[in-house]
Image 1 (cartoon, rainbow, N blue to C red):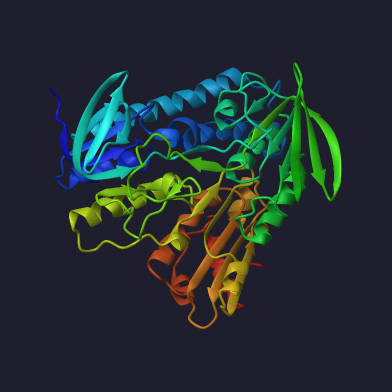
Image 2: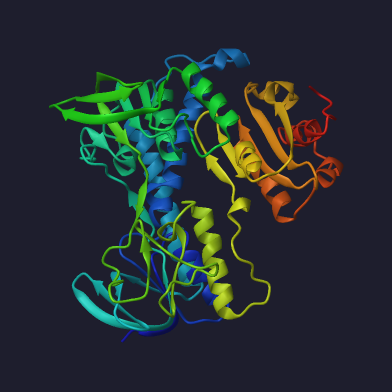
Length: 465
């Protein structure tokens, strides 16, 4: 008989769940993880990782199309969508197996089953009809979230796709409508646009990537249009008429409605937490708009029950889930140097072309919070490495508290900014000031030099622009 009593039991094997389980095991706690579908969760299997594999293919294809600008020649350029998708699925499969290896290495007991709370300290699991009850002192809910379906815009996997359908696209649409310009929507828009689709993006807010700094959003809008996308902001899709092979969308913008025809539609209008069938009824766990309410240590209202990651609300990011899981476990273990999660230190990345990345407060949010600001900017066109790479379009923007020199936020658009942003994330975690950043030596020639110049610019000291 397998063990049924544990110190820690984690429900959900995504980037929050499996990291929590491994950390608990490292700290000497007897740990179990229950996953109903696939280790690694949505992020690894149907989100972060496979989308990046698709986008890498699209990026290389874009470079091939512009080979002449690098003094190169490439004839008969093309792609095989099936093979692009197969590569993406292969990357996800490899990492899925890697998670299983890590859990085994750390002696975490894994149950591939559905799970729900069954009383204080109890979890009932159902493994293909075989039920049993597990016991644990601490139970962590890490069940993640799924795509939101709006009435009339529901995904059917044929003409209307959600992110899962788009990841295994069986056809290359000539005309594609993407509803929503958040990270998921704009990444798929970027991918299919690079492969030649005529892409229209509809966003209900007044700008694309609405969580980003307004200046960066504006630059992204222009970049997307330059690449051939049609961007409609302040617009809504009122309905979809599905035919045999195409969809007619009714789009309302500026008080006027138009009908446009598309081969496929991708719905990317947000996510909802996976709170159903978890046995929360009769517990003190509070659910607010499909997300579990937690305190700064990830505790729910039910003693011994915690929640982390997407099920616990925004920001819906894999790295937030992982860090939250570590905080939760280390607090349970009684470690002394545990600190609550500060969302202002969590970087956000969007892997479209051009890439977008940010951390901390936007300029508008900082002003609204009452700060007196120093704002620095440095364009990619002033950076030698960017020009040498053939990537001269982009911007690095920094926002400082004028009184204290605290770095309040950093916002970027351009090549490889999803890698660069971590420098500012470290700076915020270390609570560095503008003086610390000015005195830091950046290597030359690198894109990272722009990070230095943006700080200098905030104080009227930029050298190269």
